[in-house]
Image (cartoon, rainbow, N blue to C red; front, side):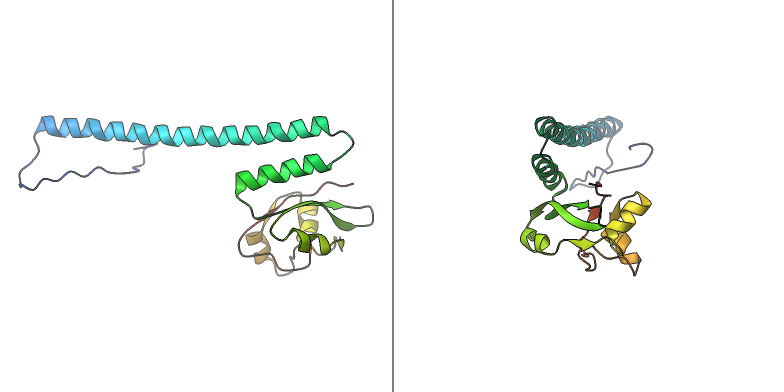
Length: 171
């Protein structure tokens, strides 16, 4: 039991049909409790490991920021590298909004990088990026699929494989 909810069972069976005695049941209960502790330890270890990975990624980005006062490229590259590692994302893009209301690629990483670069600049109007900026929230592809007028910055429908768009920085 975890937080009052069961999360597993232990099943014991023998070839000879006869009940287990009280000592055997107590021992089996102890083993089940130990298994539960082991499961909890693994869960806590994995959560700690994930938190450390996130802290490491944040630290790497901060390091890039402090060493790149006049150039955003190393910072953007480190952000996308960290996102790729932490979220197992295949396509990552940082879009920048210019004073002319055009979206431009600040950085791109992934299998369609060149195609993505060629698709820009594009007008902000009518894109999912516009919604993310206006509403100051993250959008996922699933969110966009629910809205018929939502389109990606390139003007295409968002992919069904998922994705998240955060409000880009204003230049």
